Length: 92
Image 1: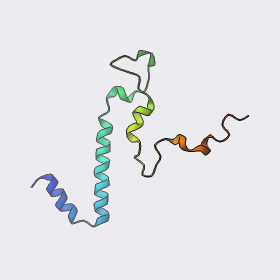
Image 2: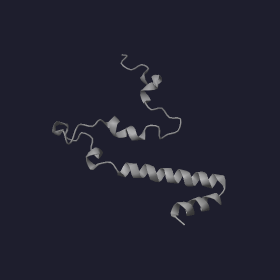
Image 3: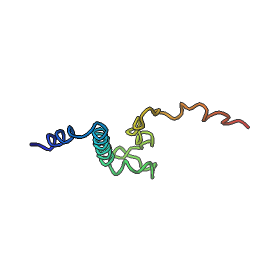
Image 4: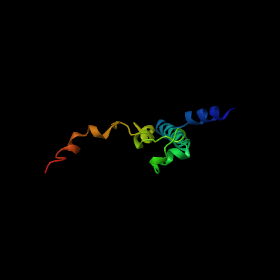
């Protein structure tokens, strides 16, 4: 019996709410795996912007954080859509 078969068999014995918890935990592990796959150069955001080269291009913070877009259920992708946040900005 493979690990996957053992997991499925065991999960089927759990109540539905605990099955949901297991699924969320697996999704969290996948999320962590993607986070750890970042290259070390990706973790540094423009520490030396003048040293950007073809091998080490400038990467915007938004590009680095793009993988987390939509992580929060029912969240917005772009916080600038909150117009109240900008009310009164620039007024004297």
